[in-house]
Amino acid sequence: MSGCGMKKTEVSEKIETPEKKLESFYSNPRDYENIFSEKEEEKQKIIAGIISHHFLAKSLIADFFSKISPENVETVIIIGPDHFNKLENLIATSKLSWKTPFGDLPANQDLIGKIIEGDISENDVVFYNEHSVYTLMPFVKKVFPEAKVVPLIVNSRYDFEKLYNLGKMVRSEAGDKTILIISSDFSHHATISEAMENDKKSIQALQNLKLENLNNVTCDCRNCLAFALGFTGEGKKFVLLDNKNSADFDGGDKDITSYVAGYYIDEK
Image 1 (cartoon, one colour):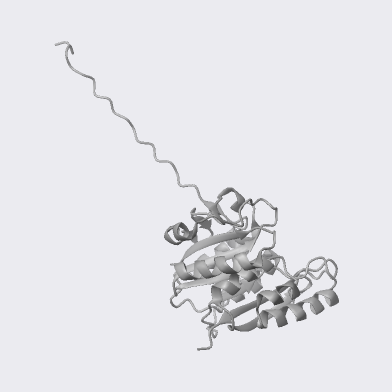
Image 2 (cartoon, rainbow, N blue to C red; image 1 turned 90 degrees about the horizontal axis):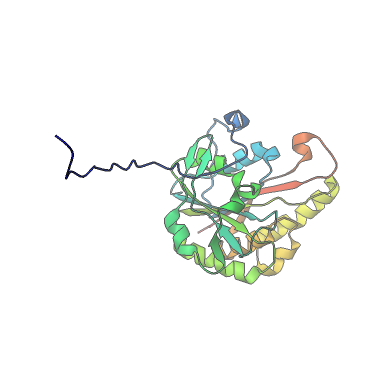
């Protein structure tokens, strides 16, 4: 019997496309061995925190994250500077998930969708090489394994008032189960004594955070602090965790970068 009059059934094979993901440069699990303390420590219930993005200071970063109470933390916003001046908009974000040594870290796509507007745009490409954000993602996944993330990179041009207002807007959409992590290093290319003097003034400004005080802070993302002030609101207590510099980790005493680690808490 011939096949006359019969139509050949066409079978289309569905090809699954792997999900595109972002990833930290520091993706080897061995990089994180022995830096997280196993002992129970007093934990802070925070609204926001500030920490380095230099992997050299990974033990300080681990200590910072380990001391944050995970209770009610469903979303972690990471905000850092645009080191390579890649941004056209004021802030970039991405809905992509992150591959980490501790498992995949999903983006909070719902929150990101709510905050995208004229000054905040999606831009996946800038996150591939921006260490101010990617360095911290494995630490977020390790300490908050069930949380989602909102990555933000901030343009280097100063517009404190606009960033303050954007911080307020994001806070209103984020809800109470969201914390903000400011990814910023402090003195750069300094001597140890210069770094200590700069950091003293910076910490004083962080303890009384106002837009008019931001120029007293020697760090690589004052814009991040303006955003944070809008996010937290004025009058929050700053708790200093530690103040170190690169010499504490590699022994070099020239061309210093300094680090201030601390938290903003609500005393109510």
